[in-house]
Length: 476
Image 1 (tube, helix red, strand yellow):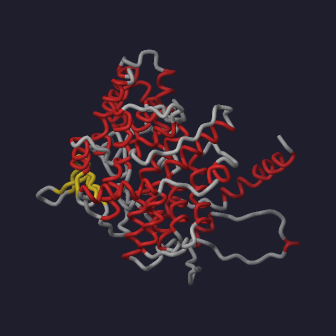
Image 2: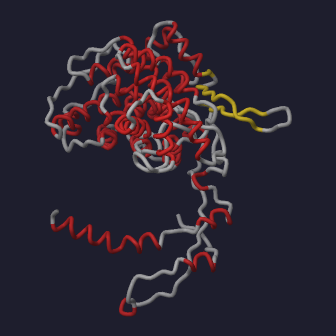
Image 3: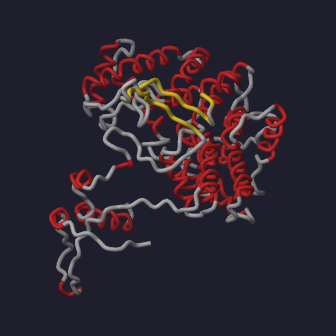
């Protein structure tokens, strides 16, 4: 440890308790003032903060008496059920990413000529500025590809002469560029890290204008550029299912918040990326894979349901894996009975598992999908049902495709940027106010002390609860 590191560690250790004590708020105050933590009520329902015509998440119905009852989850893109959309392009033996991107951006399904033209637009946009890979992506590579991707997005702004123009035409141009180059920047970022940090071979494959987004991702990632049709079709489906999920998810809400400030497209998407990378959001599928690895290491017979149940109980009781008390991939903020994305995905996960000779692993996932809700119901007081979410299977799929864990969340970003782009344009077109929620201040006024009279850092946080002095005015 260097002297600088020791100095900083000692400083942090010294002031950690002061920081925690003076920033802790009594949980009872949230109830007292009616503050909905996480912008959600006690039942997990989000606070209504906007209107959108881009997608719809449906998880409940009403009975004849007006009582809300859970139902199988449904997801609609621009009015179309996700099952109908995915079935449509699968039955026609087409890739769906480009078609559904058109739908989300423009609000209607493309005809044959529209789709052909849109393919060409995306292909022509799969170009990075001269020497961008060398000067930006290959310099200071990081094992955190989401950070590398964010850096690349912000640097692209330097090459745009109209970076701050928020006219819809210009924003659409910027969004189409970013949608097109996200796979390149993420995959190249991984290759740079894998070469410079892991001492592996380095190769950069250019995308093929005649291939779909899913095919190009696999082509650029693999040394020999090869992939099977099943692999590309399953990845394509994963991209479509991850494209959009309402305006309330954390990264999409971030998109709308930063858009409302008047910021440029590159800054908005960088902010959304920073939100998505969190393990409570886009990083959840990595935790599923790591949890499954831990299960296989600690369960003698993974085909024995009781042994698996016992491990799941230990997870919930904080006795196994990361001791967070979570069975990763189970449960969702909105869905209770089922996540439609997981249901749409599962049969193709099985198909890929058959091709990869990993049926036993698929059966283990299926067992956990069935058993985990029962264990959670036995061990926890829950306000709604629990089911597998899309992250439960997506990490398994990516591992079968040979996609490294470092790219799990960037793959999510390659899809979700489509939804972010649609929401950015909807916010620009319809709303001219900056998003600014209110926070209740419980700060206590204090008498200023000169430096010579201060002995130690001291704030009695109990005063905040006892005095409750309201603050006048507000800051900008």
